[in-house]
Image 1 (tube, rainbow, N blue to C red):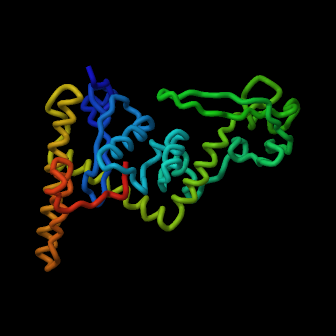
Image 2: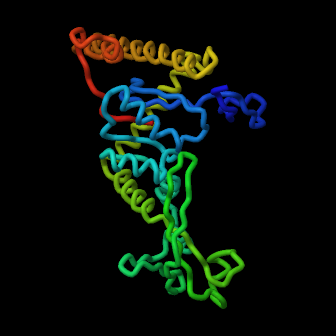
Image 3: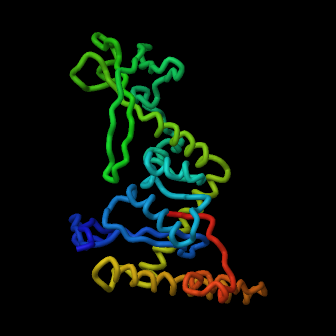
Length: 291
């Protein structure tokens, strides 16, 4: 009863068949699993904040840097990371499209209209001012309320660009703009296109994706062996511990073969929470979370 019917990537019938499952979220650093959590909702947007809270409960602090794909780019998530003081290298839904060499902004999309912040109005492609007429609110499934400013043109009747501008029946176009989300997107774009952001974007593909690839294809761990969220959590916890020990042993063997020093501290990373304070030998705090 804790699971939810979801569409899986493994679809033998190729007909969009749904199966009961969980949305597994992991954070990784240097391809080590630093945290994990299971969620019943299939979308990633609503999992980021609870996952960060899980990270906080496990380590006593939030990561200083977060790198994630566009599935996590929402106003609610950006605001949480901003107020937590995190560097959010998190893409939004149109970021990939904007980075294409042949990308041309749509001049009739309100995101590309000129905005006068001083007098709070937009200018449409024909040069007509769109004044603010009110505010609307939307509520997400988690209860977060977003505020959208509404702007309306004075008169679109007879405009030669009307057929390309909008398809509504009215003679005055109305747009809704989320100014706070636009600010977060602008900040995210600057971070993602910086030299450090390009480096993080390159590493994101080989951090959690490589872990999932090793899990599913190298170790054939494609489905849980128990029922119920508590048992499934126990199931994956043992797997994550074994995965990290295997990864550390592989690194030790490789460094020993190359004549390097053996990083013994890594072996004690995941047994830290179960040891008493006087028995804790080594400890390093993960600084980055890659969702």
